[in-house]
Image (cartoon, rainbow, N blue to C red; front, side, top):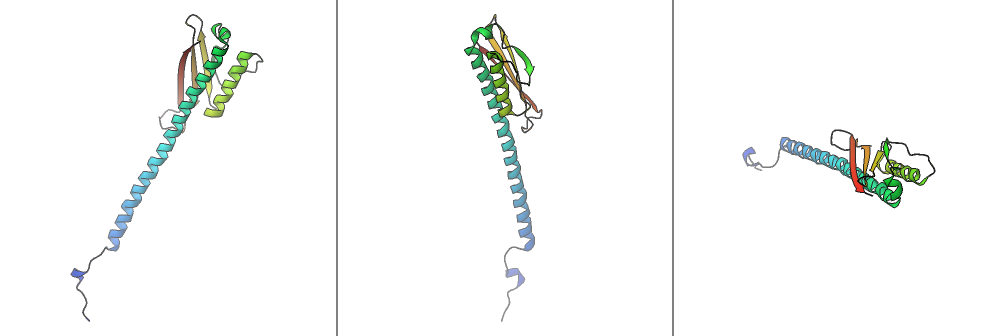
Length: 147
């Protein structure tokens, strides 16, 4: 029986296989890191969209009660606590703050500044965007609308 010489033998050595597995595992770790970043940014984009929706919701409530809006009844500084008043304005603002906290988290706060002379209201929504990758965790959306 005749054996083939080592020069005629072919195939992958164990070292070649190990290097291939190492390169593949580094590539898969990179893909997993990109997926985690994409999920963080997706959550941050969702929260920004929710903040815009919330600002338009209170603007619609002010438009529904335009007389009070023009008289400055809705004007509030930055607040994180829902008002406890029993009138329509406090009820609207209370529902708005509660809705923001439900959709943006417990750190959500809002401010309303209505100007009678221009018949406009500036709505500011602030929340903690700690899941995003923008660096700073504080995010703020400002919306201006006519009443």
